[in-house]
Length: 296
DNA sequence: GGTTCAAGCGCG
DNA sequence: AAAGCGCGCTTGAACC
Image (cartoon, rainbow, N blue to C red; front, side, top):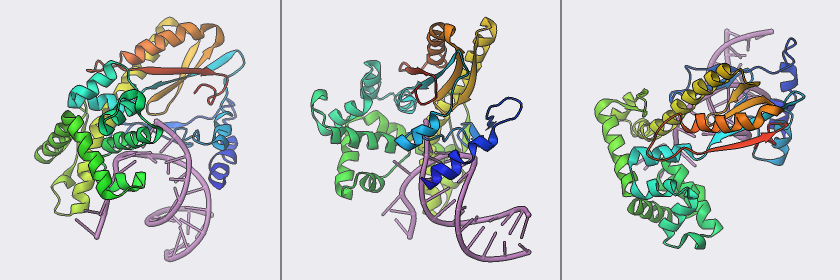
């Protein structure tokens, strides 16, 4: 409650611009090592959403009269990029058939039919999927799930047995990072990792985790930037009564005149989904509302 | 009055 | 011995 009050409730009203009556953030383009934007003064990329109390803050972000907010976010974009980069057959298949990827992972790892996956199994699989993107070890997975190290190690082994392409990709990425001193995104953005050669184990392992994560997080950043350029160009050409007002890593927020909503949503979805052509389709979830919470 | 740092926590 | 990526903001302590 103290965090919500001091960072958001007390502070945001003080940052309303007198001329526009709005809060304007600054997007930094050259800060994050992976190519993401960052947002500051104030940061609008960390507005609460995970708790009911926090959501009340998000509800304060509203559209002007006669307008609505559209929130469009990429579904599982980093895991889709992992499928693309690794070429793993099972993962490619899961996305080709538009499966619930955590459920599909649970079915593979626990050896049960899709329909028989329990809530706990799905939760574990989700932790594995996120952990993989971050280069997590069995130790970290054990702590995350509150299970023993040996149990976590079994999950990891099973995962790599079922998704051998992912295993190969992880090993290959570490090798390439060590040899070349950098990793890169699908579009060629590089992250240099001098510490990958370090004799200091902590530094070296950190660099290895970054080598795993940066191509996925960075490719996602590249894709949404391409989408932003496309979407903005299209809105300008059309003279659509809509504008792009925020970006939150895998999400674009637009403010749109109510009469144009249907047309804008369809085109927005297309432009975002076509911002990159990967080995799996890109899916975009769209929400509409009078406030930012409702739009989710 | 200011700066710097670590810890903690908000988001993807 | 370390053990999950990327950010920014607030707090409180230490310091000038």
